[in-house]
Length: 201
Image (cartoon, rainbow, N blue to C red; front, top):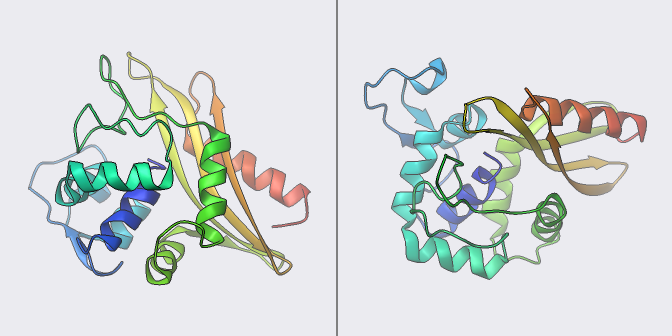
């Protein structure tokens, strides 16, 4: 789900969507396990509830050629989109999936924040609004969680990718935790603990 960061930016840059308040997901009437997915959603709402079908719709609208162009342009992971334009970042048994390391995730975020990637200020501002997760007297946290499951459907991987603004500086981060039952919320908790101990949050 951390790929939603980049799916969002690419969609805005390609003109597929105009802003975070635009409705990007028209519910198809199919009832899904996550209740928040069972309604129409704006881009901001879809991002915050991590609505997979909404971002699959965006990826299809972007198209495989433009998606591949952007992943190559920003050097995102191994850039492998061969499994399909609307599933290449979604792990599934037998499916070859886009891969990226935590270090690369943090590096891409750093490059985004320092305007070293070719995304407009408008796109970056819209993303920041969607990613804002927590504000304290010491700083502001921005992030996106992600969770991965094994072939049996058991969660075994938790991601949290983003940045923190504190004391006039901005710090990018990426955290990936592995273990039985581990999810994105666990990675976020680990990051928040670390940032608090560092005095940044």
